Image (cartoon, rainbow, N blue to C red; front, side, top):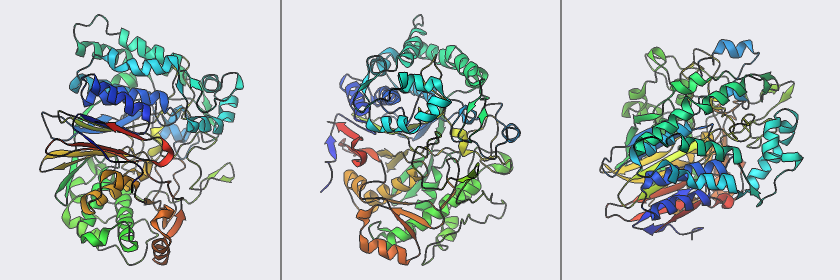
Length: 591
């Protein structure tokens, strides 16, 4: 039995982390839009209904294929570090890590420009029609989620004492919103209206979208951001700082496309973002696991779970040692890391017991970067241990985001993971009704690191959607929120569907687990050596056997890990969609 059916049809399918976004995507498909029109409309709705998980000031990555060209492409909506974001500046501010909250940690916002570029090049709808859904919810209100209310309550003291513009938006006159009441975002509705109006005199659809991009990147949005961040404000570090992002930084960034990085596994091609993100860690893990028999990598057994987690530890260690948006000596050695020979070497390092060490691979021509390994991070004399709540009282957020998958009847298929710009990321910019993200916290303040902070370079994002092809034809789009866990949970889905023969919903429902035995990508970047987090439904016997193998087990509850969604398309045109039941929020829809 599954929590819900794997939906099947032939017209169109959508699955996202919020039912309103899924319904929006479906509405666009029903009105003749294609998958790209649908995913962009739903993406802007997520700004409204999941503001604690993403926002206009954040970022995204996507991977997609069109009906005309099955070649997987990456949508790059990950903005780089601003020109003024240097290691020297942060050190001069008294910081040894990029803070987890506050505008100093803001990369150039990339999400909105990426949505516009995708719509321009692959959509069919007018921008005004695509944004109509989000504008309506922002202006007229939507029933606010309990989790949004909980997030606002958690950071209310920060808002009240240090971020008054956020308090004015999210807790006006000191009143916290209650679950289910209508919440309106009029300032953001006005921003979207102005972006649409910017193209009123353009001659065609593409010109109208380009005019909106210009208004965002060079006009009133960029100007408001630069002016607002000049004022110092409280950061997660407990100290006050001004931001360094300028209008010129927004003007200098343009979203675009890259070729996907791919790997063959059990007759399937797995497509991910480049080594500037964490996506290839999934490919490395699959390359290691390729050398085992099917029965040896069954996630439902202790031996299989052990091998899966140990392989993921090795890949994540390489992520921290070699990944980043670097050049020259700091460029990731992509061909080596994905080679069968290297995978065999790494496979041989999987022992009979759990490793509690960070073990990057040894490369002949490269020195592995050694990140700081801290179990706790002392802030003003207080330890901030790993495993604290997703959102802390100082605004730091550990890996939560949202996700969308859409496939249409023509064969267009797209998977996008937007994030950043959470309502708790940094103070609300009153003129815009949203705040900036904090993606720079994934950069080390160390110039020797491949993911060290450098102006105009992308932070090593955790955003990592997936496209799967068989015989050169796209068959699955999937992804999940979850920061460092995104690829770990997607790995389980791939093993269960490709190797285990599970249906999509069975794979999503099945008990999940992951490792935290690596430096976290989010402030304060601590790690938990040897730790394995499991859902209790994995079973007492299996969990006991994993403990006997040396894993430090943390039980998370029965339904606590993973927020996967997926859509699929068979060669004969049958479409499916499936979504995560955990949290009672993700939703799959289609016919």
